[in-house]
Amino acid sequence: MAVSLSKAARAGAMVCILAAAGIAWGQETAPTDATQKGPSTTGPAKAEGDAKETPVKPMSDKPSVTTAKLTSVDGKTIEYTATTGYMPLKDEKGKLRANMFYVAYTVGGKPGVTTQPVDAPSTRPVTFVFNGGPGAASVWLHLGAVGPRRLDVPEDGTAPQAPFKVVDNEYSWLPATDLVFVDPVNTGYSRADNPDQAKEFFGVKEDIAGMGEFVRLYLTKYERWNCPVLLAGESYGTTRASGLANYLQERVGVSVSGVILISTVLNFSALSPGENNDLPYALYLPSYAAVAWYHHKLDSGRPIELAPLLKQAEDFATNQYSAALMKGTAISNEERDATAKRLSELTGLSVPYIIESHLRIPPFRFEKELLRSSDGVGSLVIGRFDGRITGAPTDPINDSQEYDPSLSGFFPAYTSAFNDYVRRTLKYDNDVTYEVLSNRVQPWNWESGTVDGGYVYIGDKLRDALTHNPHMKLLVCSGHFDLATPFFATDYQLNHMTLAPEIRKNITQTYYDGGHMLYHVRPALAKLHDDVTAFISSASSVSTAPK
Image 1 (spheres, rainbow, N blue to C red):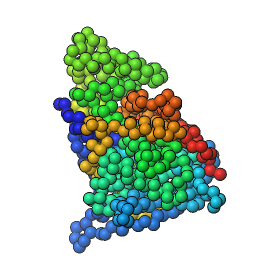
Image 2 (image 1 turned 90 degrees about the horizontal axis):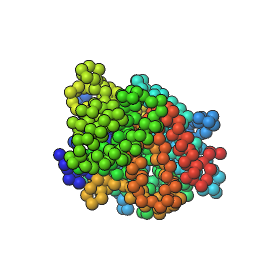
Image 3 (image 1 turned 45 degrees about the vertical axis):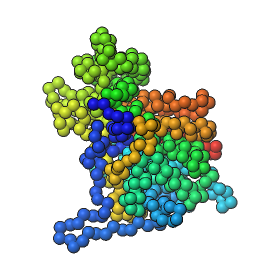
């Protein structure tokens, strides 16, 4: 069924599953409760026979400050300070709007500031890090890849088993930059002062403005205005980071030195396949080929190297497949059959299934069909966040993936790990529920980020940020097995930003043999560290190494 452009904008956002580990939305429906609802944030549930509920501790502006040491992958040991707490956001009359929770790591012994002579302003880079959703806390990048401690995940990127461990992260970005992990309002511990004010933060532009205010306040409180400022976001966090870079430069007066995008979405139409939008079918194809290659589902067997297969899939998607899709029902039987045959060779799906699907395979059907057995016994569904990871179907005859096996094991792992880490290591106590994935940011104002009421598009803001500040650098990181924000769609979005050649040289793209949370795979985590460290050095005009 065709949908109007304004509805497509919202549906596209839902379908994408945009988060660090994202929020599991229905394929064409509103968010499902199964993966979004956390415990009540009003305190522990009233036990039977209790006279009243246990009160929640009030929020405090006073942060917790701790110190620790980290030995990086190159064998160097640094001392750092962790500052954990709230940043109050107030209106111009001083009335509280929201408390935004953050954890900041700085090299040295002073909260927020790297150790330095009193008369020398800090010039060490500071990177603001957040995840996506909208509705995801920053814990995914915090304990997944970037912070000085990380969730201990098996080297192959599968979900760990309880009890979950947090270990020193030798691949932390901290040796290259100070880090500030920020939770948007109604994610993590962040809360608006009242429900009516919460709505002021729930929208594409509203969210960017709120995060911009946090950055301004942090730079002011910790005297970091003259530092190189970088932004790092994942999934919907890349939408936020792209808009925020422009907002900081145009509205706040902060010159952003670099932006790091992990699992990117700038144009939601590129991720929203449907009856009136054929483009995504071609953009998903190389990721389908990568996943089929991984599971040995290609008729030609599994080539040793993935790269040549991806090149073939990209060429076919750009040329013959796109031409076939444009013809719709006017396509000849001969061209239809030839296209279906080549699609089968690249995806591992059967020719009859592809023809019956009119050459159009949406991701939620590919995730269910690829490993479906002929007799129904032993069928598996593949993960949307990571197509390498599989699970048993809950409804074998359904044509769509019922859940994401590449998310279901990680949600409790990150939730448990952070709740333990924040209390025992960071010495911060808060009775409010830490919302790792939350539907409490709904309804989200998607319209504020659309172009003429269509799909959400933020590429123009990123283009403006890059063009207006020719010193700004951009690093874009994509996973080959990501079926939420496929890498070829990211390539398309970047290639369609109108940038001067000298500006485009400031963009670096890197690819990893991982999924949406590409850092779960140990070799990808190591490569991401190396790529980011080199990028920060390039984006900053000062040495990033701690003294």
